[in-house]
Image 1 (tube, rainbow, N blue to C red):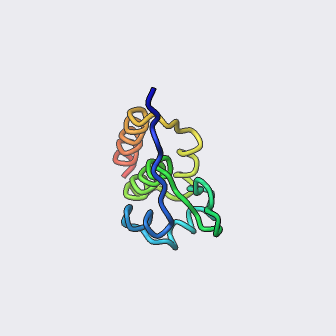
Image 2: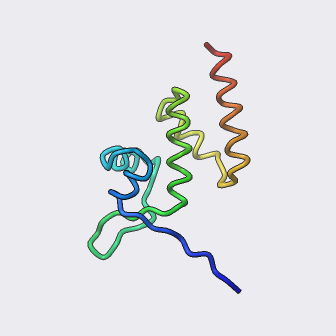
Length: 100
């Protein structure tokens, strides 16, 4: 039986990977939108692929002009099912489009 290993990133490598800044990641953490997977032995934040998925959701919703409060509400309801997440984001985009 094979096991799937997770990839972990330091805050700097995670910021670079996602084209964000460390400050943005810390801000999202303070707002409760994105928590790191944990901390290394030196106390530095560590992120995994789970946070990568969540950050992409946040960034997509920010692109659609959703407020941080709206994003927070969305993330509270959302599941980790990628397909369902895309469908929900599509529906939100349509709603936002028709509100304008």
